[in-house]
Amino acid sequence: MGQTLQVVLIAVLLPIAAAIVQRRARKDYKRIGRLTTLSSALQLSVIVLHAASSYVLLDSRLGAIDTGSPLFGIALVLVAGGLIMLGANLVRLGMRKTVGQDESGLTCTGMYRRSRNPQILSYGIAVLGYSLLWPSWNSVLWVVLYVIIAQMMVRTEEKHLQQAYGDDYVTYCQRTPRYMDLPGMK
Image (cartoon, rainbow, N blue to C red):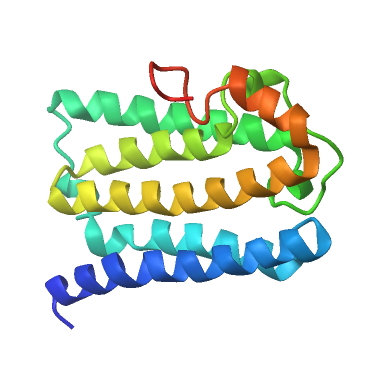
């Protein structure tokens, strides 16, 4: 299969798969108030498929990295910083709550005071950094695909949290940005 066909298939099929998974997640949230193990695994699978698609969309050869480029240092900082923040957020929230299976209350402390979605943001920072190691139009596509997938996940979860926590969640949304505290980002 040619490289162009692989890129087109990923660009089309990955968002479709993400939409199907989010439809399943919405049904679980509505039916039982949390994600089932299957829905959690499917959501994780979409993220893993996105990560694996880097082998097609990005050059991914260590020898192809331009270590003399100013982007190299920026990329390393973004990858390392994003992964460290992701790990810290996962530990802080706990795995069951992270994957939507523990609805023991609204978390508004720690990084959740600065972002309603610090894990999505942290992984996105790592994705951006990784793509800068092999800058190309395909790396832009890879980042855009992550943004699309992440936005689908966030919208599904937000609707559930609004229904589960009502005014408490609305108040939280009013004071905390969805991703980062930049003008127009709440």
